[in-house]
Amino acid sequence: MLCFGTDWIWERALNEFISAHAMLDAQGEILEGMANGVALGETAEGIALLVEKLVPAASCAIALVHRDGKHMKLLAAPSMPQSYFPTLDNIQIAPDGGSTGTAAWRREPVIVADTAVDPLWKNLQDFAAACGIRASWALPILHDDGTVLGVVTLYYQEPQEPQDWDWSALNSCIKLIRLALATERRERNLFASETRWRIGAEATGIGTFDADFETGAEVWSPTTRHILGVSATTQPSYAAFLDLIHPDDRTDFQTRLPEATLPPSGDRWCEEVRIRKADTGEERIVMSKGCVITGRDGRPRHAVGTLCDITDQRRHEQELEHARTEAEAANRAKSRFLASMSHELRTPLNAIIGFSDLIKNRVYGPVTPVRYEGYIEDIHKSGIHLLSLINDVLDMAKIEAQKFELRLAPFPLQGLAESALMLVRPQALAKGLHLELDIKAVDVTLYADERMMRQVLANLLTNAVKFTGSGGMVRLFGLRLDDGGLALGVEDNGVGMTEEGITTALEPFGQVQMDGTMDRSGTGLGLPLAKAMIESHGATFHIVSERGVGTRIWSEFPPSDVSAVRQTG
Image (cartoon, rainbow, N blue to C red; front, side, top):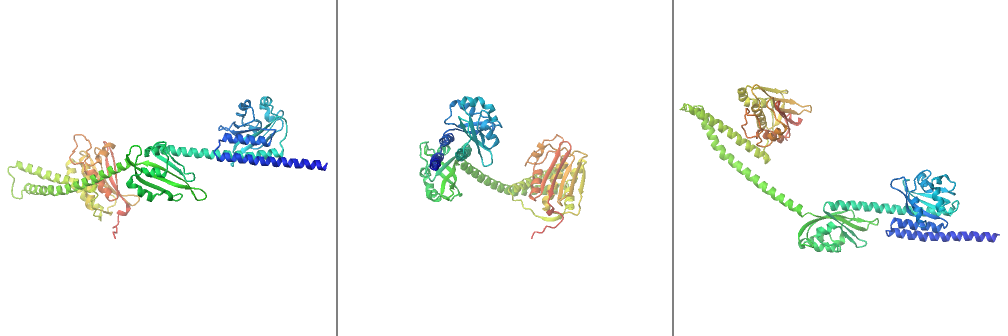
């Protein structure tokens, strides 16, 4: 009796050893297949066959959770009849979804020793009877975060309970299928990422390349081949690319980026080089960008990057540079011309203005005949007007060339405002306008170019008087801002402007269309000059206007330019 019991124990141990050895061999084959890129379905079928080899009485099925999260999708059932598949391929994940659906619902193993009486199979009785299934148990395949990925299920023809060896075999296979799913998911995500990257690059006309240092294989994308002018049969390599580089650039490229000493891992390269296309011989300029990727051991594994044809971009840059050079030359010529014309025009104008003034004031006696007095007055006014226009044009040219020099110094704001208002008082009185000086802080000292600010206020006041009808109001105001700065400007209740009119008025030589009763004399430089002069001080320019209501134009100076003598040392 003792001898018989000992033989039985040894026989069981020997069978388990043989099964364990067989399982290790089968696992090795499955893992090797996964490493070689075998499809997930084929890998799952191999795992199911391994389970059936270890548990001969059972048929194994592996199902994954469908993307709708409500049903199971059959992945492998190598020994089960095709007639089973419609049901196995659409098992509902529910508390009473048989062994498989319930295991996915509960996220824990489910054992059904007898399908004929177990309530979990009440909705699958026809299927169980047709297929002869009397027992079934299932183990869920769980992700690290607890999510159910799938279920491994064993089906038996006779009612029975699982043995320890059954669970051991199932658990070992669960680990394999989890590994296979994780591998497939990583490969799918990597492929999707690479696809998105390549599609994005190709859509913008950028080619890609990938060099595998371990296998020596290189891949050039279709766009890269198009840029280089090589056919689909050309073998990609460093040497093949080197042959296409312009002879005058080849040596420098090899020096900067030799094949044997690529940049260290993580370092990026960016090389611009001329090539001659393989198919047409056309010279093009390309830019190569990339980096080296190393493995965990620190050894370089891949060099990946992009290739872009930048010929048109470089040509456009050259054209822009040429245009800029020509524009600068033209600007210098304009400045020389204006400087020359300034002297040539001002000299005779000063003579005309001076002599007409002498005659107008009868310095050497009366003018005869009397009608000449009107002519002399017109000559004098026209000369002064022309000189003013010339000065405006020259000032605008200096500002555009950024050669307008500021003579900064502190001065009282009250005196500036009074002197500016005095310049337009005769014209205002002639039109019956009310001039108002409204300086809230009479003791304010402003640090600026006094002559330039007087010209700014004179331009603004002149425009206000010109475009305000008889009986209207023109106000010159100055007030302290909440932050200690200063607002200085002019407002009127004249004809006003639309938004489009403001845009036109701020352009050099811009003339806003007004009704026929308004004086439209001038160059259209007054407002642009005022804006440029204000902004050259570092102040801000503001304008609001409404047609038929009036216009308000002002500058805002920072607190550092107000009330104190600014230290320049």
